Length: 339
Ligand code: NAD
Ligand code: UD1
Image 1 (cartoon, rainbow, N blue to C red):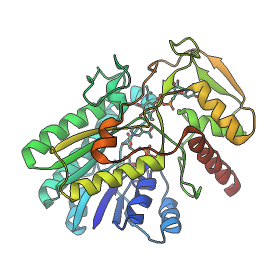
Image 2: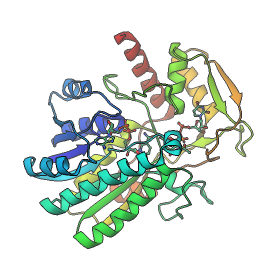
Image 3: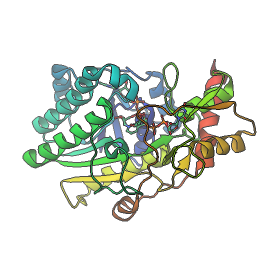
């Protein structure tokens, strides 16, 4: 069976393509390479021994998307990763975010409707919860007002899906990711942040390899045991495997509702200092860091209640924090060796 993976050369998309192929699915990728490289297709082929089909175009282009669906028949399901994801950038360029993240989704939904494709997995985010009133956060927890246009596009996308699914008899699973980190064990694919990384783990590994001088730890006065903010970090391969489970679930007709939502995390929260300690343990070196002020817009603590995903999908994240940090470090070292 053929699965369309939009954003399939990106960070989470590329790991998911590998898992899909290893489970016997054929994959066609659409990506405009706005935040990834065509070489990723070669790396995927190197890992799996199978080259995914690849189309390079912008999904906000209605005509091109329509033509793609006319050419590329027999798609059994779609995983829609393609989106912009930098929170800070979205504050400065909100319209760019609304246009890219919403238009691409609408064009995909139109393609599904026109071509009788009924299964969609959508990349959502724990950002939709803001700072939850209760932890761990459940799928039924209230959606809080968005703190950024990026977060708002995820909330709006979920709402668009809810209505589109009802009107057009589609099946959708929205997966709310917590904090994906780490890289494939082959160290052939991983996260490739452009410029200075915003996210914690790439900043840590780039500091350790010598690309950055020092990590700034944003805030040590949070109401947490060591004062630094807490997140639910999940290995990207565990996350990728959940997408295969979601696709299997839809294709085999096991969904219980036309629109389902699952949290994807480990259920464990770790502070920034705990992440640094884990990195120092697996890398065997000391990380240069300093405590600075809080980063505006950061929530204090958030971690997932994963029981719904564990029970209903039969999926569980398996890798622990040390394994996540080691794979991220191996990836950074592999990148340095290529230069
Ligand atoms: P990424 O930037 O590595 O991958 C996204 C891919 O989509 C890129 O390869 C990019 O070139 C492509 N793309 C973007 N806009 C496109 C368009 N209009 N047409 C065609 N291709 C386009 O990001 P990622 O970390 O792999 O994230 C994948 C999805 O998961 C995104 O929707 C993101 O919002 C969501 N998400 C990510 C995180 C995270 O921490 N990485 C957390 C929660 C949710
Ligand atoms: C952020 C976004 C989230 C998005 C995700 C992926 C916010 C509020 N959330 O998650 O919506 O899906 O990125 O792009 O922006 N930290 C440091 N120093 C650094 C970098 C981070 O101390 O240099 C801390 C942060 O304060 C935070 C933790 O590390 O406590 C994780 O940060 P990060 O990796 O950026 O992810 P989030 O902010 O959780």
